Image (tube, rainbow, N blue to C red):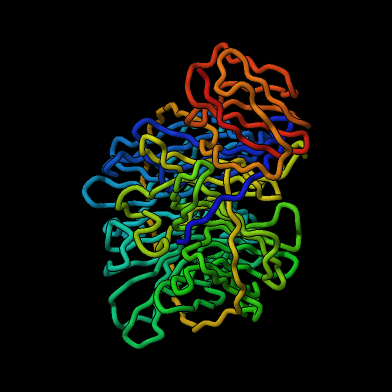
Length: 581
């Protein structure tokens, strides 16, 4: 990618900690985070859950982990989860119901066998309340759950609501998620609130004769007033004898019966749908897709009742390639637009000290008009130094784009006291000691983050496609108990540590005297509001109110290089380098 100079960012200041944007990273000793996803906790606390897995350097061992974090980004509790029988427990998604978190993913027995699991976790402290594993069709098949959602739909056609869950994923002949496997089949598992199965269906293609690749996966499910919409991929052919990954666009009713299928192939290699949003006003489904041919994403609009694809469906192109979408969601300030978030595969930029930086898996946010697809405002990308670690199965960039797993990396949330609406994101940062930390941040409607960003230039294009079809059928799962063991653990939290790269935003002149300093530092300027003194790795050393000409005490500050983040009354900020002797 071309080298890009950073753009400056604006942070908002508030005396109410719950209304304040933040950007920080969470590090575990000798740990590498992956599979991170977010979910709000709807118990009137404004907290949210961060779920993922912590690997060792060689990706030979892993721990399922959940953090509970408050609206200001402060960790409330952190737990890992293991099982005595299954040495491998990997979480891939979580959903919240009031004061309980439900997780899915897979457990592995150590001999080459995987099973889907569901775990019920107390949101207040992380204790396990219930857990089971599930095998699809028979115990000889491997399986794993990619997403879990809560539903109150009628699951048996008796006109009575049946609260419970839907888990979507993959089962087949191979332990790992492998497109070369001889048998991959998508599944939907419907359970009650006690995690007991009600019905299960499988989905596979009826298109391939070559048998060279198998892309039959389900990665997400979206409820509408008339059923469930499935996303993921399905194997298809445009060129005879050549298997391709096609977009899955499949509707089932509340009993698991097929309603319509609008799956299609767009490009010349790999196409995949990753998420969907149901719009009650237009009664349309907005399906989010990634296309390897364009190296970008797009949105397909389908009528919920019939599946007819709206001709205003679109995709994006641009010169700065490999930007892939993960989540589509409602706007936080405009009912006529929707938001998309995802990861940019790789980016280069130069920081404020003229040091070259490189970041993989950087979060971006894109906003568009529901009716026309027109880009609204900026497409904002947040720059964080990171290199994806290891040749791991769900490495995002093992292929050009992720094959099937797209975790929920963002969520819009309005605070219960009405003090603000924010977008929460999770990403990754490679730390100075070469570990992989979780990068957590909240941004307001302006999309401005606490560190550095760039704005991407994209072009809207009309969608064209070739239809393909899939088939579904009822199957029977088996289930068994899990005995998950909960272990609290400690993390190290830092605010974002590349603050030196923040430019001055055309600020009035601000001077530090003396610099280097020892016992006291004086800051001179107009409209000064507050300051934060940060050490070389971004940890806050001191903070306070700032007035021009008033002294900041350095009596307890050790010698070294520091950064003084200065906030103005109007919300603009800048960062100055300071040497303490």
